[in-house]
Each structure stands twice: as structure tokens, then as C-alpha cells.
Length: 405
Ligand code: SF4
Image (spheres, protein in one colour):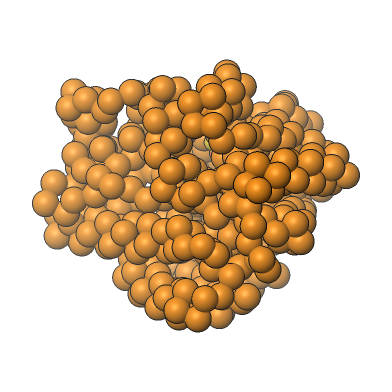
């Protein structure tokens, strides 16, 4: 089953990327931002926002990452750290980008300023500092409380005050002040995007499900790079209209969906098709994931922009305590009628690998839902064996089918 609205996404993303290099008129001021950083604030300051993690994912998806990591390793960036970072920095050192072929732009856009949030990991700080040194431009960070259990008001205040300080500093750099109306509008557009993105992911509740986790990995691009803009809202309205038609027609993303899986952890970008086909051939569908769900933010509110941004970006799954993650996961497993969980232990992203401290075992015991732990990586395909994975998946899906009978 094909999701036809994807063609519209290609047009939108082409427009987005080409907007960094306009044929006419002045070039935009460019801010680089982490994927769960305060994009709305940057939009309100008049920046066009670029996301290096999206570039890392593209390097992985086009299987170019491994060509470039060595250049970053030679500069002292270990092969064991985030392969988004090493492939992105390596590609930059090698003067290569998949954006040229995909969207016709000559290079990645040069930053005027870089803004990161350590809500996801410390790597983003080191990553952005590399470029700050190279381009001799300022980099600013929001240092989030991490491993948050219940998010308290004091924690929200702490992050909100950093966002306010950031707005003041960025204002000095750009010579522009945050326009409160524009900020409220960007937050509202992000809220709407988030609601619509959540609606899309909820189509996975249908049996059979009309989409897979791997479709979600493709469809999430506007939620990441266009949130805070009307384009993202318009896209997900269109997409969800199409998905309603697929559900009405009883269409299934995989033939004879017999087993429903949950994908925990990062995608393996260079192997999305392999997983979609391999699981599909087994009659198994990964109908939900924590990864795609990470861009569903409950906290956005245009009436209280700074505190709501602080709340939304601090309570993300990756930034929660182990106990809170288990609680959130258990709710997702019930919501999507999951038969089994695949934990991707990503070699270079311990922050988004939740299989290393006993969580799979505890959750299986609590819910009775079996799990499989699979080794791999987001970009570095040297860490992934197709043969071993196929064997493990076959045994796992067979076990789940037997359980169901
Ligand atoms: S969360 Fe993981 S994949 Fe994302 S930037 Fe940090 S280390 Fe890299």
C-alpha cells in the first residue's frame, strides 16, 4: 500500500531546503537547531531553521554515512559516539551532502547561530561546537534537567528562564527582538502539527494497521523540520485525510497482519526497506514506536509560550527516568494491542537505547509481552548484520504467532 501524500512532502521539503539559497532577494538568517530544540523561538526571531540530525538521518538513509565517518574519526571524534555526529561532520569535511541530489542545493546552509538543547544527549553540544568553531559563529545551549521522573514546576521554571535568556541573547546577535505574536503563532502551529502527527500515528491502532513504523520514519520529516510553520499543519491534514480513506477501505500496510510489534529505539536508517519487507513477508507489522511518538508534544500552549516550550521539550521520552519510561511504554503497548517488542540497541546512541538496564525484562514480566533485543545502529551499518537479524526476527515472530494461537 502506497501513501500518495508523500509526493506532496517531497515538494514541501524541496521548497524548505531551496529556501536556504533563494534565487532572488537576500539570503535568510539561518539558525541550526537540535531536533527537539526551541525551534519556535528561532522562528519568532526571523531565523530559517536547519536541523543537522535530519541531515545525519539522510546520510544514514542514503547509506552514505559509512563513507564519511572516517574523516570525523581522524579528527578525534570516536567511532563509538553518535553516528549522526560523525557522519554529518565527516560529510562536511568531505564536502558532500545528499541534499544536493535530493533537493538541488549546493551544500548545507551556513549557520549564523547554533542552538542546542541537552534534553536528548550531550553529543549535540559537542556537535554544534565543532561548527561554531569552524564558522566562527555563536552557539548557545539550553541545559535541561535530565532523567526526569514527574516534571515539576521548578524544573519547568528553570528551563523557561533559560529560554527567556536565550531569546535576549539571540536578540542581541540578530538585532531583532522576539515578536510575542509571532512566538505565540509558532507555538500554536507546533501544537497543531503535534496533534495531527499524533493522529497519524494513532492510525496504527487499527487492525490491520494502514501504516508501519517505517512509513512513520518517512512521514515524520515535516514534524521535525517544519514544525512551527503552516506548511507542516497543511501536510498532516492532507496525510490524515488519505489515511482515513485507507482505513475505510480496510487496507493493510502488510499482507495478512498476524503479529503486531512495537519498535523501541532509533531506526536503522539504511535498512528501513529491509525491515519493512522482512517483517511484512512474515505477516508482522511494527505498528507503533517511541521514536516516532517523540515528536508528539503535549505541552505546547500559545497562551504561555516560554513555560509551555519548556514543558514540551523537557518531558520528552528520551529525557525521562527509567521508571517513567516503563510506565509510558506499558501504556503504548496496551494502546496499540502489541504482541511483541523489538528493542534496537543502537551502538552509538546509548541515550535512545533502552535495553541496557533491564527494562525489556521488567516490562515483559509486568505485561506478559515478549521482547527481542537487536543490535544495530542508526547510521553505522558495520554494527548491523542482516543475516543474524533475519534469523532472530524469524524465531521471534514464530514464537509470537504460536503464543497467539
Ligand atoms: S540522541 Fe542519540 S542519535 Fe540523537 S544526537 Fe544524541 S546520540 Fe545522536
